[in-house]
Image (spheres, helix red, strand yellow):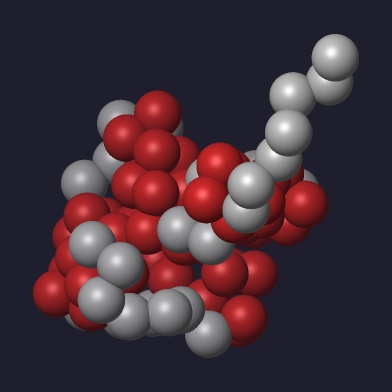
Length: 78
């Protein structure tokens, strides 16, 4: 799961700066940068606050975190 990808995509889609988002979710711009780069896994409370701010359902946020590697090897349907 790539939390950083979801944070960055949603922030950029809403044309918000890292500093603006960080302030509203209660962290520093540096901490948000670490989340977006995959260096830190955000706490659930941070994800919840972020989702409310972005007006996106939590399920929609988690959907964005998945990559093909999360599913392992999947054989194509024949």
